[in-house]
Amino acid sequence: MITAAIRSYCLVVHKVVEFTGKSVSYVMPMLAFVVAFEVFSRYFLNKPTIWAYDLSLFMFGYIAALGGAYAQQRRAHINVDILYNQVSPRVRSIFNLLSFALAIFFMAIVLKMSIGKFEEAIEYNYRRQSEWAPHMHHYWVMMAVASVMLILQFSSDWMRDAYHVCTGTTLLPEFDIIDEED
Image (tube, rainbow, N blue to C red):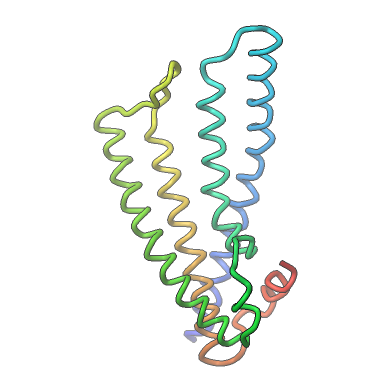
């Protein structure tokens, strides 16, 4: 019963994170277009825009932050392999449990700070200090959402590794293919 609930939780988190990560990847061509348009406008038309720099910063922030959980899911983050690859899978899972717990703690702090910054941005009408001066509150909402996505992904990974440490078997064998490919 508990194993089925944990498995279901991990599957739901996997699907939500995968959907979000793949969806945010469609912002990359838009970012490239904005940057190319600014270059064209600035150097060929001699009329730089006031919005392209701010918009490209926001778009890049969205891609990086919202894609972070998907990168974690695909094991695309940097790993120190010197010791990690020399130990058994069970010891690797113990290493993962420690690092995921630390990451969840850190992301909880980022979440709390993002919510506070969002409230501040609304209360004081924060804007980016540029000629265009766009509002900043949407950025803090995105940071809060990205933090929640990372917490969900890390908690799912933590449960998978805890299950592996306790039982010696994998919770979701279909995801081991992903882990081995990367």
